[in-house]
Image 1 (cartoon, rainbow, N blue to C red):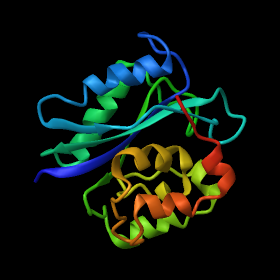
Image 2 (cartoon, rainbow, N blue to C red):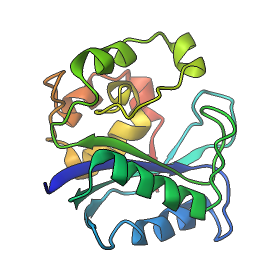
Image 3 (cartoon, one colour):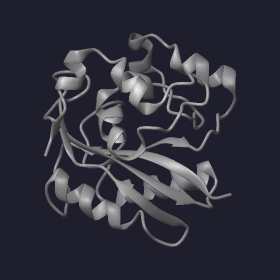
Length: 186
């Protein structure tokens, strides 16, 4: 398998190597080794902290890469990169030095359609408290997040969500204008 993978990167705290911009730049180097081939990198964007008021603004980016790894092995690799830059998983949606989310792997739906849809339809109040025990692909809130879709527009505008049938560009256009305008290319 040589799947096209979509990743979202972000951070709003400095790491041991420097600012969030520098941290993301250094992390990108670790996404182009061994079983990973980096294909494209978006511009960097400054985005408001999510949820609003939870900390300093983020720097976000997106990449496409190809990999022969399984989704769980790739996710494990991404977590090891995060840890190398000081990521601590203390609070859901908390401030962080580096976050690398596996957004999608080709047209895979994991673990199954019903689970993916259940998490996609989860109320915001539950999203803050609930954490899935397994990897869910595509990311269940992809279609709601300008800070993911905006950078993905640079690298994968034509990728189509296997369940929603919408491209990244169409999902981005469906966002509220205020969310779109909150992205600042650097």
